[in-house]
Image 1 (cartoon, rainbow, N blue to C red):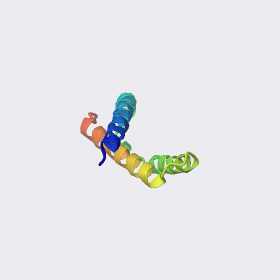
Image 2: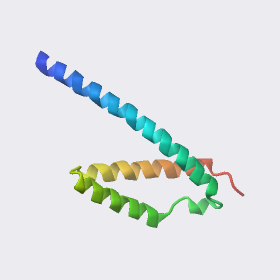
Image 3: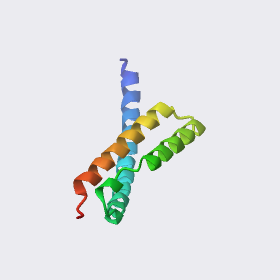
Image 4: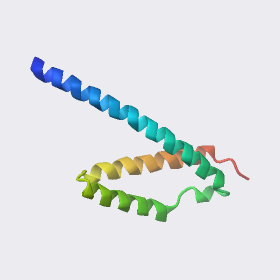
Length: 96
């Protein structure tokens, strides 16, 4: 890689780092809401709502196409995020 391209790469990486920082803030905010949602669930089988998941993924696909984002990327991100929050809810579910 040329020295000029290395400089450009570093600039782009710094921009990615700033975006990552913003994403962490959004994930923290989302996690706080998930904690509140979990408190409303009385039974562990209420954690996974397949209809809601399907609705979310369809909505994200539609928005991705509208915003010219590769829907395969956003689908993978949302599926992983949903899975991570389901895992979180299952680990933190403390009802009878």
